[in-house]
Length: 208
Image (cartoon, rainbow, N blue to C red):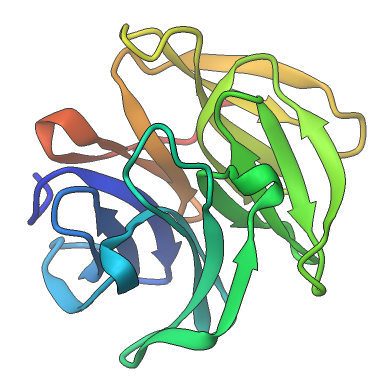
């Protein structure tokens, strides 16, 4: 079980995890082995952190209001043990975005309903765009490819793991999850995601 309700964003940081809560509006650093919280901070403006990725010493997050009719999400930077950096705030393309990864060169933002992955340059401008075959509920970059958690119907248990090859843009189905996942991370051996509605952090072996 997660140590707080409604886990949303998730990313791996060595022996730690970064998670957010849609309920508490906070960002947490957890011990990966025990899920004990080691540090936490409030999200400015009572926003929700929807997605997160660790890049170097910092955590980059997608923030925005928890409102279906508001498309004004932004990418923010968090300094671990310090908090949100007021000097960094980049608007998401068209105000939309949910999860983040880093492909070794750029941040990559996913947009759920448009089914897009968009690279974000150092200047904050969108670059290369990939289109996924299904709605993207989480993604990460691992072993030279993007791994996606996807769904065809968010109200069902039809959720999947897919792999997108950045060289070709082609996507292949790898496995069925069978629950409403949120977020996706990889620790070098296993994947991590959230079953938000039952307050669970879930880990499973890498799929081929």
